[in-house]
Image (cartoon, rainbow, N blue to C red; front, side, top):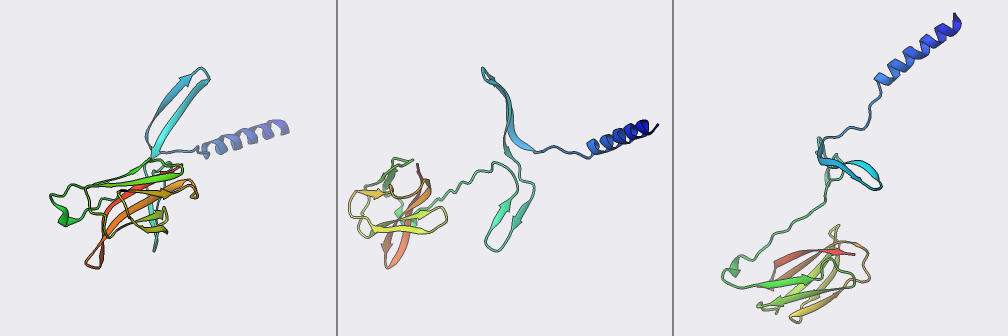
Length: 166
């Protein structure tokens, strides 16, 4: 009788315990199944953020696998009709980045290299149509290269590049 009561209690506790368990759950942006010679796998990509927390200087969205992308679109309004060709290569970069400027007056122009946190790492004057920027001493990360000119004592941004350092 005692064993039956113990067995019944264990079954009741097990049933109630299992009903309260929850597995990980997410609302994914996309996903699927993949199979190959090594086996079978289900995967998900992205998760829709359902709650955002903001503070004085920070904003955080709950979720998994959220991309971190910054797009900067800049232009000088007075340059209508001017052909401007500025490029930075190779991107991703390993050791040296080449900043190439064609069909643009380089007098009073300079570049600034920032890390992903906005810290200024380099601030140098552009002296020729091709400028070599040393990046071999920097760690693998994302950097921003800002090209600007000084006109009438004020700085005007020409273009900003997102640079990936391998």
